[in-house]
Length: 360
Image (cartoon, rainbow, N blue to C red; front, side, top):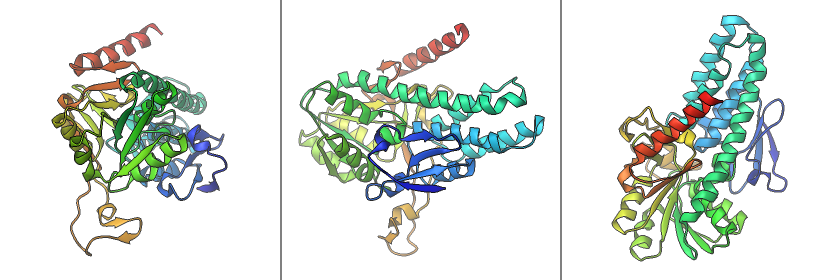
């Protein structure tokens, strides 16, 4: 895993880059104090970077996993069934790194589907070509989400956002932060309140950093301050990203999102979710079936390497929660903005996709 200091903000336009023999990503675990690009040249390095959240965000980990599988294929020397056996084993390892974000498993499954029936000699270039297509499509999807969702943002409004759903997380323009950026491109004057997002502080470390780089006014608050600002009339809408959206519109996102949705409903504030179609999971009828990743308790008891709790205290660390669809005002996708009933809208998206594949 090679490192390189950032020279000139490449992360905002190329948060992940194919180098020919690996990928280059900005190490998000070091932000905002250090801007270090890391080169990942093997699938093991890709998997480790995802697990350790050096690269994080549902769309971008799908992109990286796709490249990781392509890298794995290049290194497999066996042929025939032995090649495919190894490739499928590696695919499962990549999928297991972050179980909640469906973009990851969907990208890997798409990679495997791309080589069905192909000659083994043609599989390696086919896998790399498919990874590049996934990357390009995800980046383009974020632009459609951003400029479609910007219409929901009133001029001179204050937007609350949680976690990080910008370029760092998506491999493109962004989803929740992309909408905010697109609103400013439209000439709207907006302000952002970013929650710190405990326990790993993605809002404090990443969202505030991205918005400041974009010149968008942002104020940082602790997660527990959100209700105060909502009740005081200081928030006009909430915009968040998503890691998995069930068929009925129930949405898994970073832990604390459900709390914000309940507070927004109580205070009559619109609550918007922004996500690409690769985040939609028609196989799950509701959010009850979404797997929730539990991470190391040390993320709660420590900040960086500093202990903030008594030694040996029990700590529980679910990384995500599920927001029921009735608390969501709209879901902005790259195929349009959905409102209740979400199931009908989500099913139509998949129907259109299947018909497009059949006709293509």
